[in-house]
Image 1 (tube, rainbow, N blue to C red):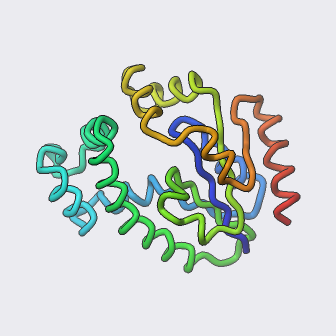
Image 2: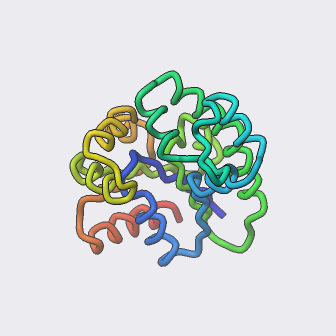
Length: 195
């Protein structure tokens, strides 16, 4: 069983790549964003730490984390982003490692983690794949997914690592601007090497 880390900017299409892998290879996906959402869904220690760090105003009328408000804060302030990242690494990384330990009966565990290297989760991976896409494509995907303005989407991207970071650090790169068939072919070539 191999652990594969998938990383890249917001809007690069990491989830799409993970879905293709799941459909074509005997694999289980662990999505860091979903883990983080689950850990903030109830009154967990993680959520309490976020409230302590960012204040009560990031909680909505249903006592849930207002992720949009939090995103507005962290993507406009590098220091606040670092504070959230630190909390996320502390709680989410432990949860992901625990989940990896429980998975049996598959050939690949695929980690969908935007901050794979920053969180040091790359250290549990047998291989890492960086997903790249054209900047405008990423911006459009972010706008459609998160229902935010062009400026906010651009600001988000400008607060993340550039393509060179992924090219320099990942074992493999997938260019996610191409047709579905070409993307599947890129994945197939990577998985041949992984076997």
